[in-house]
Amino acid sequence: MFKDLKKQKNELNRWLISRTHTDLASWIIWLLLIGGVLILIFLKDLGIKDRVSFGVLWITAGMIAFYTKETYELKQLQKKDLEYQKAPFIIVNRGTYDRMPCFILKNVGKGVAKNINWSIDTTTLTKKYGFPNCPLITAIPSGEKLETLALTDWMHKLTEIPKGEFYQIQIDYEDCDGAKYRTLLKSGITNDDYEVLEYRKR
Image 1 (spheres, rainbow, N blue to C red):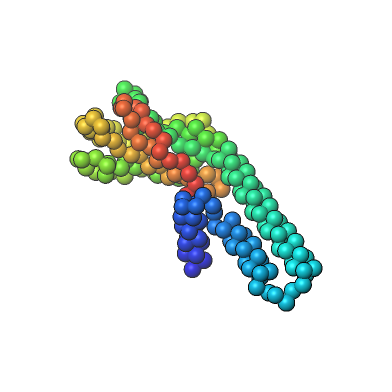
Image 2: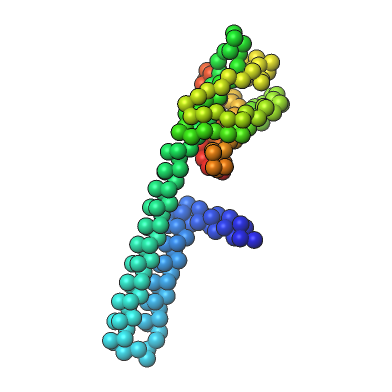
């Protein structure tokens, strides 16, 4: 239930930002401030002194709320930046191993990558090749690479892809604390060139 509410909140937040360039928390604070103004207008029993006191308190509360929101968001950004500074980051290239064509998985991040699942997605192609699932890779330390011959027998098919079409490689993995990450790559102009479409925490 709470996960669904959080998902709906995140979707509403993204929609508001895309339409108004203002997030949900800012909208709530603005609505509360407007509510305070309406109270001052319609509560005619309040004297001038009470109105001024109420207005000052309401504006002060709004400023504190904005400051708290900005501080929280800054801390979240710093936390996320620190996490990514220590996170693994797996990319893929093509090369050779013992004169055999192979994929090379390399960890260019700062942490160990564990439980690495990767697969080739050809659903974007006119011709569907149906590459098999790649075997699980236990771990790749930071700065290390691993040559895998898992799809050697299939690699010649990649050269048959028509010009202008592309396939994707999806890599899912974890860090030492169990946090999950994903890299999504897109094939480039040359056979060993891959563009990073996405790198994020899952």
